[in-house]
Image (cartoon, rainbow, N blue to C red; front, side, top):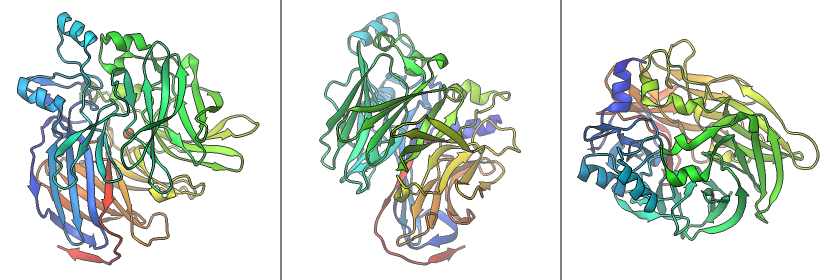
Length: 481
Ligand SMILES: [Fe+2]
């Protein structure tokens, strides 16, 4: 990776701006109406200090408003305690994923007695009823106004925040009415807890599973009848989190000899239905899960080990010798009655930040996954192309442009569409050539560019976002030059 690319995507703090409309070139799908809201770091610098890892930083929301013929853009830092403290004191005050403040022994003792929990909800966004929320792995989630992007307050699953972690990938039921999320509670005996959350934000605990050494799980699987916890052997002793002598993720240990354990929880009873032991592997993202023909089947972007976390430290990203480990699509099959677990690698293509047409969640015959990837012809230690993986036909498609680094592709279905891939892909792309970013619109079927909207600054590499529909009107595409 060149220094220039690193400087643009990881280093330059983003300015708060509003541009209405963005300069757009291409064909605009006039049915596309609503807001794409993306989350990610707005800066990795505080005063003279710099965070250490891609998963650190202070959160910024980005909103692209599609009005049928043009796109408006606005961004705003989440006005959190972590952000305010950093701005007021000119230094990192709260611990993040892989960066601790520069603590003295006295500070560490103070943090042991009264832990400061970051509210840097920078990883994802979602909507519960009419509540828009920025999501973090820490227990503090941040509510925001979708029009102004102003921070409105915080939400947590429990009052006692100390010793909890959650995921930024809640699962929704078929009606998109009730959400479910995993909250790990660290204690002498720790627990994996599943919470149900309705539109009124009243959490209800529906499962509590004791565990000796909790696993680092960034997501989980859900089918109509089951939750699936994929317990990778990247585990933590709760005591080390209590004393917090090093940044959060560095308290976890990789114990491959323990293997990966799949815990299947019955959604009705909240009880464990089955355990399955398997060889060690690691992953961030469950992609889809379904029940079919007596099997519980799920797809996941899988790694041999958790080295991908190490690859995202800035010293690694800056190193010309470093190589990014490839996540590959695996399909696991767990027998619901008798039989043994099995898996197959469905694709050798590098994939991360995977997305699907969410209308096909829990469908056995779903076919397409959209993801960021690495072009095999480039020596590159960061994602530099988009892929559309065809699970059934194996006819993958890619979008690649030299010097461009796309973020997570979000699929938006065309209203009234019947084909799974009838819609558009939206992705923020950093363009090294112009030293700025643009929002890319791809036709999801052909994977060809429909158009791009120029953003007058480089956007730091973010994580996840979501499209919130304005209406269900249908329409044809319009051409802009
Ligand atoms: Fe994620």
